[in-house]
Length: 315
Image (cartoon, rainbow, N blue to C red):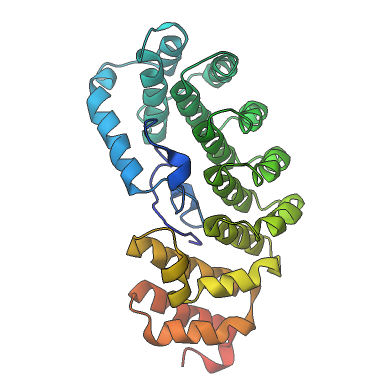
């Protein structure tokens, strides 16, 4: 899986999501989209600390899900309940849809879109918008694309991040223009999420914006943009991928202290290089194959050499 910089795969806010009390945009540096496990691109994700916060929320409010309830019932709570119950209901709806414990009835997705649009129209608790954005991605209904694209301009950075990830889940290229614009968002987490999602859509229409993102001041954005381009067969980010295949560089530049995240960067880079058939990177990959301390990295490098120089095999 072509993943990314600080990586952590699991539920972008609950598939990468995060507890609303955390500044997700500051931590989206890694991986983490379960659905991206087989894809060639880096995924900005919410790191382990956020997952811990998610679990805390889950256990704190777990009693809310012990009763058998429908998706419509949760949406009704979002619309009419008071206090914290509204965002808690939105969170539970998103989590239960993700886990498969809750099935939507016909018309529920349309209702969720309407509730989301209503929540964006007032001075709502941003947590309501964040978790509803995630729920829309989990419904997978393409009718939600316009609302989620509009949410890329939400005042709350986490809502913008979650909207980007949900657009990736839905996988409709109508989101490309909005996501391309999000590559210039003032929040680095939003830019990372946009680059990651564009990699999943692999829409050539986003290539120019991704090439610009190769010069982003945040290394995670640059890395995600290079991988996204590689998925399209565009070699514009080849030099960036070569730098990602350099263990010493990654150790210096990575925004994550997690060894697994750095491993993911290296493995992702190697896979991207193979996709581009970039033979100029063979020397860097040979170095990884010969002596990288991580077995996964060595194995990925050995396999890459077999594809980049088939006559020489893996020797």
